[in-house]
Amino acid sequence: MSAKHCGHHRGHHHDERYKLNRRILCGIIVFIVLVLFVIFLVWAILHPTKPRFILQDATVYAFNVSTSPPFTISTSMQVTVSSRNRMDRVGIYYQKLDIYATYRSQQVTLQTLLPPTYQGHKEVSVWSPFLYGNSVPMWPRLMGALQQDQNIGSVLFKIKIDGTIKWKVGTWFSGRYHLHVNCPAYIKFGDRNNGFPVGPVMKFQLVQGCNVDV
Image (cartoon, rainbow, N blue to C red; front, top):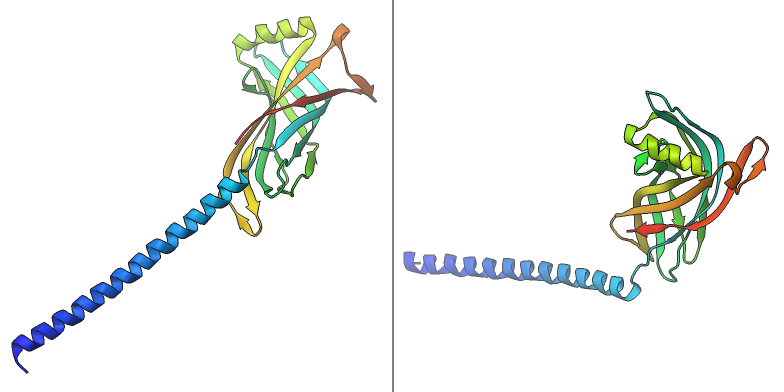
């Protein structure tokens, strides 16, 4: 066999391998595109809707403010928050949720971790965590506003939830999405007190809708 013929034979095998690799690569690309298209189609048809959160009530065990430097606030309360999955075909998996209270954008309690929860179609989940903050330093510029609110007899807390959720369709789970919930809680004292005593503490029926971002 001549050297020219051998070179032609090797070139032919090289072309065959190149074509085979190219077909395999094209097949992988087509498969990935089809999978992404199916996921997009399912997402477009089902169109996941944000859950609805409601702050139902708040029981205040302690609320103390230091009016002399160093300015601090101590808060102890239990809140009841409910969440409703409004979808017929998509489940919601609450993977990690932290709940805490703020006053005028300053966090005044520690974060409390809520238990992981799966929520089926149209289901409602309810949590009743305790929120604590002992001698939390307050920004001096907020003390004037807080004292004014106390004199009026109404303090606006924000009960906030931060965490991650996943959508579930059949056996398929989506990637993680950030969940942020903001619930206003008006706590009224003195002559404007709209709560009712439960033993030595005050319970406030709020039934307040929350702002939800996903």
